[in-house]
Length: 505
Image 1 (tube, rainbow, N blue to C red):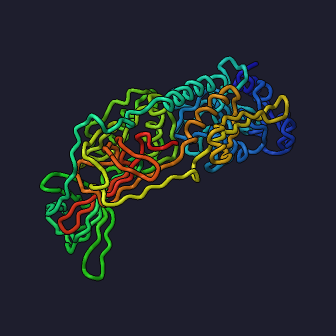
Image 2: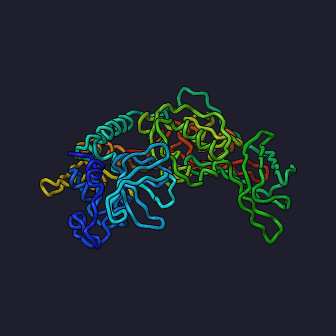
């Protein structure tokens, strides 16, 4: 079997017999119509490449949308095309060609229906009429033997699944019990001194704040937030705001919203640097750790960095049209799957930080937490039976693979997760991984009105000792969200907690 481009090159010079009549259009059943995509589909057929890699169609719209639905389409500027990929032109004209090679910034192609013939063409990679590329190169081997990369990807997927299963079996560092650590009891903080400094038109102002000032941090994909009300007028969107608690730096950010009130007060919304990670972009990177990716993004967007943990695990990805938050989180998620290590990205008074969960040894119990909400649920994202289905083209039937927990089914009834899969080789292992992930009763614990501590941020671990409805908790729990409230000199915080072996039976 030959490469797609090898077949195409043999057809260079072929001309239509008049009014779009070609052997290519005959193959797709559209003789007499524009035949650029019919040429591509015919070449794939001659190369022995299946329609699961190159669709049989005469329509460039259908072809491009097919690749988009398969997540095999890459927009111009986000991907360097390779031999055998398809190039789609949809800006100003509708056309498709086959990539022969890229040399420097020049793209070389073979195209059908180019001035009524099969011709070799060349373009700048920045050519304005190019929309993007249908990825074919990754799904056939370099010698032209057809076939998808399922064998290759299944090996990779197997390795990833094994890693995920091992991770699920291991106890994380978050599940350590409280015993054996020096723990301080938080005391109520009264007469807390809060100072707000605003930089407005290059001038520094200390502004008063109404009671009820709040600072909130969350662990994933959310910027830190400061909300306060002030009678001050010297404040505008874009101004820098620095918050100190008892003369120690606590929060730094920029004004994003002002809401003047009828009583003359102005409600101010301030976000830290992480707000700029809501920008959308596309990144293609090879063999970079999440740490290096974060540094690259920070440099591109002018963000300041502090101490960034070395995540070590190298990743190659293409992330198209996503928020910077998602692009970074994708890399961190891959790091978790491969290493089992959790990292939190946060802003520390104007500098981006990345670190693993750290312990803040201040006790949360019934005394230090004035109230709590606790829930136990199998209603959302809980499954005790995993059903995976593979469409077997040889037999024309679905091959079914089931992983289940008989004990949990007897207790809660059948709660099933269903998914179609592309490769039966990973079915059993994937079923085990999904069962480990989803066969866990969801327990959520929120603490309200706890005595405040400026040491607590989302991503840290706090020791919790509490006697709840169905279990006693005596372990370090991960802070998923914390809201610090300063009101009339008193300082409290609300916490959303997870981890510590808290979920499950």
